[in-house]
Length: 541
Image (tube, rainbow, N blue to C red; front, side, top):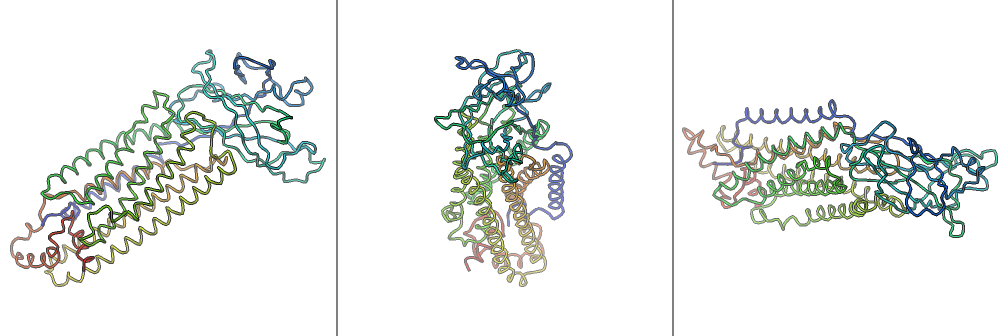
């Protein structure tokens, strides 16, 4: 009687494999907790007020807040009024990074949040539904002497959402509103050493541009980027895990093709899961260190979305194949009601990502969070995605319960067997149930990671840049995915060992009869394991 490795491997060897995988899982968490720094860093910048003395400039001039070619500066708007400087001639300049520092391709991305400091004035209050119009430019250079090269230029609109907690009286003039931070800029690569942002707030009374936005005193920016140390650890993990999964995947499929029967649906889905894991593992991010590939963030989201879809679909089919009778098994079309919503949800995530990061490939200042409708849509999307993920997990728990009940129904055949044979099948059932519980644990951690990562990214757009995932959580979950896929392909690979050969003497007749009782009544049902055949027979009955 042949089967999969999970059935025919000795308990001692199986325990060794399990302990080894558990040690690697602990190592994955420790790499993030002890070696890697926090995934991201946030740096605050205060914009410098520069004066543009030329009203109608033909060419673009970039204003530096400090350095040898720094601009003419003013400290306050009162000083500007005293010197007769108009608001249209004031440029807010921010240099990223701080003096004596450099940006690095290892930072991977740069997200910038905008914060206005607006003082209360009785005769210049913030109007209801106030919108700020921003004329913004982004430039870069790679040394301290070259001219700035324009990277992006845009007119953007941001809704002000400010509250004044004190009474609106003359005594409280000069106190500041509490304004929500605004999403401002996101670039998918940090290929240059220095970046310069110039911001203008053009005023046009006739067109009511920047009218009713209060008295803006200062502009502050918060730059968020991935830490270089975390990036190196992340790349190293990908580089190590890619050949591991690739080798086990090739080995697994080679064993499948050596069988006399064609592969069943479950075996094909396991192979597809290995392909998706390999796809997300391939460390193409190494090229982002040497090339200015701004689409790497979007590409990374697409890869992760494909893996999520494949992993969630695999769990449904994995459980379903142990519930279906032999007439319904091995047909992918049977699962369209379960897999269809997963594919549809992944497609919606892809559309949402294209609307955000797809547009940012040409305009890094664009964001769906800029408008009230876009913010509500994004918030609703994150909420619905979290609810659907929780519902999926509950449904998966229900399917696992059904599988356990299906197996329990077949245990009634065990007492009639010989002791050795009964212990063998009880061992198979225990191994399978343990694997299903590991699957549920992996699913729970995946759902938690998905929800927390979506909420964390949302917090950044809301301006709460202090919220971030721990490095150990990132590396631990990523390691868990790889170890789980590795274990599934290893344990469900066809075994060369034959269980019946070990007990061919003395118990041969009983063994043969019990085989007929438990499994050979469905000999036309091929499958990777005896549990697979048992559950199919129970479902049929």
